[in-house]
Image 1: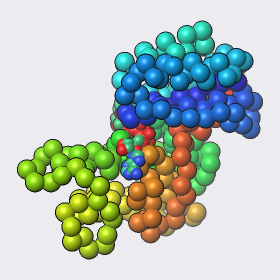
Image 2 (image 1 turned 135 degrees about the horizontal axis):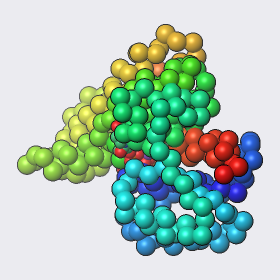
Image 3 (image 1 turned 90 degrees about the horizontal axis):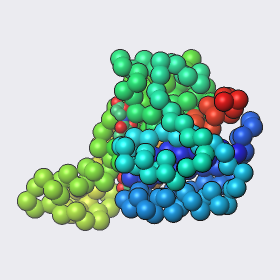
Length: 247
Ligand SMILES: Nc1ncnc2c1ncn2[C@@H]1O[C@H](COP(=O)(O)OP(=O)(O)O)[C@@H](O)[C@H]1O
Ligand SMILES: CC(C)(COP(=O)(O)O)[C@@H](O)C(=O)NCCC(=O)O
Ligand SMILES: [K+]
């Protein structure tokens, strides 16, 4: 059994898998890491439910404090962190500086290519939204980083005198300030995704794989071939862990 961990800037997602292929998720969850003590407690509870755990494999883009808290919670397990490289798991990383790619993006690209080995737009709607282009051959051609929905709404509230941080609803022709804000942020997300999809739209079986905490807020706006898939990063980590189970 292996504990897979995807530490993003808002939530830590985790999954316990039986070590051999095909990976069976034995347990899965997520927790906001705004309180690191809660993170340690939650991971300790996972470990107590799975005493057979010996290994943990993760990706972290949330900084060194979160990494240290996870390492403490994984004391006694062999904990490895995924470092983006030039090639791994059937995917080639064409980033100018491959190691600078977010490890969550890298893990999600590996998970996406396993799930759908055709042209793919891998979208993670998290704290930030990432929109990554993957060819049928597994070449990661590059991708976007933009503020996530909530960050966009917070930017408007903090950056203006009159705009509130309030719950608006999507509407095609907003006539209320809070709806104008919500709709603008959702349209911006959908626009970025649909514009990037155009670059692969002509490829056979081209598909957008959309996941992340904010995915459901704009999935319905997307007029492209779409599959809602959460936790692609965990799936990518699982694929790599199973492939290298000897170490
Ligand atoms: N209903 C919602 N509408 C928009 N954003 C949402 C909604 N629910 C959760 N989110 C957002 O999802 C994000 C967390 O998703 P997650 O994929 O775990 O992010 P990360 O990987 O960055 O930790 C947060 O930015 C949160 O605001
Ligand atoms: C873009 C991200 C912040 C997304 O992280 P998340 O929203 O999932 O917390 C993360 O992938 C990251 O820190 N990337 C490093 C820079 C890059 O990918 O170019
Ligand atoms: K993420």
